[in-house]
Image (cartoon, rainbow, N blue to C red):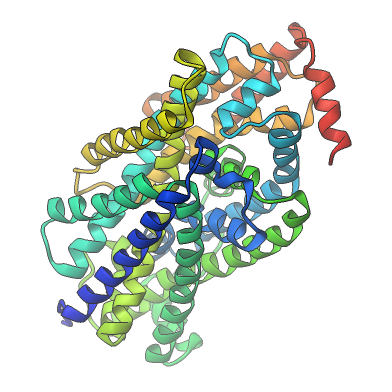
Length: 491
């Protein structure tokens, strides 16, 4: 049985990479002159940074751990998740990006998603903003915890340290550079991390194929271990396929991705950013799927012991490469974790500082005070996520799936209708958002045992139904229709 040894070279590469990310965070510390700089980067980001930042912040540790682990266990059946995500991301860039960018800059200077919803529906009572902030804090806390779990598993495997120490180390690195750098630091590090993730995901399966004797030989070995490994339909029901494809619905409601549309320099850059982002995503997802399936063949062929399927990428990186190269490849996992967790921490902190404190309790608060409170918000959310992550048996994919469904059903339904239906009302937005979030929670806790379908589906459908019915029964507030028409003229 082959074993993995811990090397100082891997440790050095980890330290060097972490130091680079922290340097970027400190560099942008003095660049943040206002809360708009800290939370939205002054709307100054170009198409390459915007696209890669959106992709990297989207593809958390589940891309290099959760997804390969799922295909290692179930084969290509679970690739329907990747297909659904690719379709959803494409539709998000094509239909949502331009309209959201125009509305949040031309109609009103909105710097958060709750800002946009409040402006769009003329919610002078701030009810919608409060609901938004609560949804953000609840589901992002779980989402951040998935990244911390992934980071802990990475440090545990790479350095052989106890899970609790690994969790603490990863959390500190992520929190420090988000705390100081703000949005620009997050986006520029996302770009670097996105390129690193792409390189790692392409190189690892190619080297695996070389050691296994080529593609055909690898697939034959995999089929000997799992006869249905290459099947896209055998052994899976219709509801399971629909559930996997439904992951794509989640894109319309992810605040850390939507905010990238708001921060892009100009709507003229959106087509270019769309091409870059979807190309990057497609290559990464395909390679991640193949790592999982090739892992079945490699583990069997070379008599390895793999107790945690979500560590297949980590194990392959350590076994197949020189320790210096392995350190770079494993840094890609850290990159995936940092890029997503930092973006989510930033959005959560904006919910506390901008949406709760400034907009409701102290409208005259200075930008400096809001930035300080935002940084405090980063610490608060990180601590709660850290406590959730202390369970060593947590699955990265399961935690991500829950949070993804929560945002997709609550924010996603409201976002789509708000951008494409001028007759949608304030009350419909409030009740639709609440319905989506509540149905996701209740379905996961009580109803999934009776109908095993991904909770984003009933949540999204219920929210959409409520939005339509309530909009037809209530009146559009004054000014909202004119603002909507102004958005259409500026597209």
